Length: 118
Image (cartoon, rainbow, N blue to C red; front, side):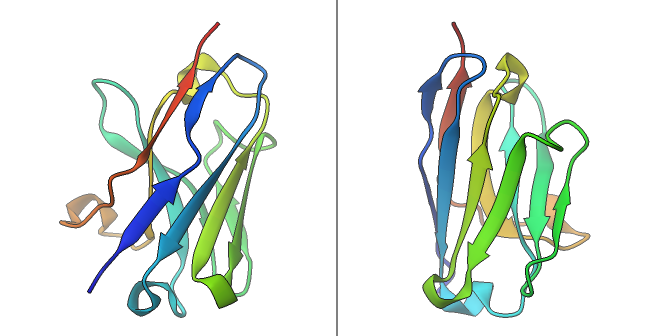
């Protein structure tokens, strides 16, 4: 059964930091590129960052230099260290497999809310 559980969100002031975690079921995690996605209020979900099964990372331009994605294959988990947070980083953060058709996925976890505000 597919399962994704995100955690670690919260309310933080601009310039602050948060670390998000995602626990994935083994059937999803193994050998797949995993990533984080963000849905801002009133907007479509967007891709934020990805990490391959061997640790190669990719970032959206808007978060490059501020966010760091990582994974622990033994724990079937990925993480997103977010530093120097900005109000435009506000949204619900989800993790999932990264494939070209990700916009058509039917399954998403509950996500974790990140709010950046003073």
